[in-house]
Image (cartoon, rainbow, N blue to C red):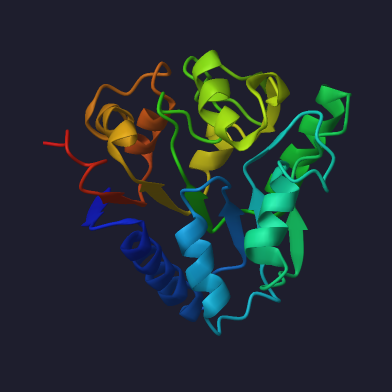
Length: 235
């Protein structure tokens, strides 16, 4: 595991972009695993501003809220189009379908998507409770795509994007930890004091399902990009 400390989110986005650019130059990258939320926005800004060509690349997103249609401005479909896909078209974009009510059917479909499109580079953020994707504390390290009930802390953290807390979806479809860990390379981004405890517990604490991010200690190729605030508890 390699830990890179940066001054701020803007620098973090540039560092992550340079890693991606160098990996693409090898010709061995075909599929990206992508994350949503504010954390990867500076990375996506760097990609959009670049001359990198993604038209032969596939993307597989980590998750989607259950119950939101793709054109809802809080859906992750909408987020990805706004921040990346409209400016940088990919060959194919795969995301969970939050409108599917048959959870078993949708999870099986998405597991097939992941199996057919092995992820070369997975972009990750991390929650304040150390969730990766929407795999909350207690999620099995052997888990694949599932419909997950969001914790109160996650709902509270996400409520800033909604008119009121009651509008925040309570469930999401999420790629499982086992699927995330099958990615060839993982780039984890984290910024701010609120992420410091999650970063410490994930990178230097015990490996336990109570800390989903701690699974990353068992991966052979992880790059962690953190600002000084997020890294402040690291030894």
